[in-house]
Length: 107
Image (tube, rainbow, N blue to C red):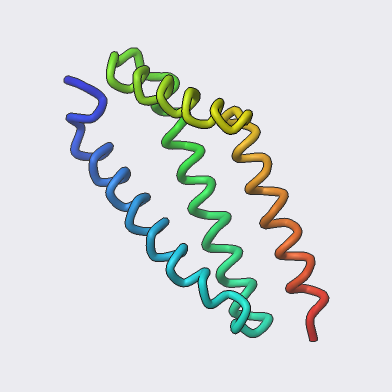
């Protein structure tokens, strides 16, 4: 069975995409959130990032051709911006840490 034929994989991919879309839409209003709202948003982003990291690791560890092609495509796309997948995750984590510090300093 192919990596992407798994119902579990399909469900997680679908949920990751939906959750990402929802958070991005909500993020447009981030500046209007109070301190607690910002903290909740950041926590949700951190959880999503961790789920994405796990999904990526599953892709990397799979010997399925399509999974490996997906990883190669992502590396190529990110490489066009001069970034590797691990650098992308590191950058996103630093951004969330900065957002967390700013939210903490608000009164």
